[in-house]
Length: 165
Image 1 (spheres, rainbow, N blue to C red):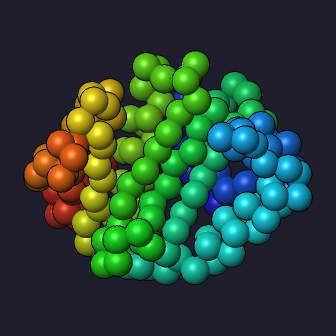
Image 2: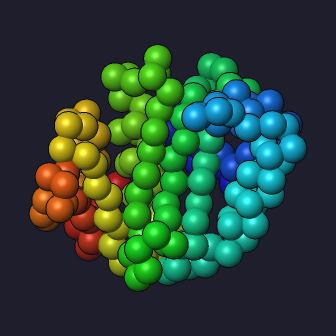
């Protein structure tokens, strides 16, 4: 199992003990069955094994408040599949846990992990043009705005040499 800690959060890989939480959280658009949740969990666990120093394959972690370490309140991670040659930071918080600084804590800890533990050279991220909360998260995490997306959103980056823990 993998676990990262922030001031308020536990970011960790999920286990079979978390199947009910996967079912609860993956309720879009029509939900998943317990069997489908088991398949999702197996995929997450298989992907975790493929991550190597300098080369993130895909890392998806559940976000838990330290005060309630059994309830998933969001997802975060690093992806190396969607854009080959890049490591992409992602995060999403359940609506009632937004505006508490949790996404910023996730972003900062994932950047630390990418640069210090996995020796990545850079990390990218992006957000939609209307998602100014996510824009601010990337700014607070120290990422630099580099361009606009073709749909008007924002692309951010951080190089290892610019990271400050």
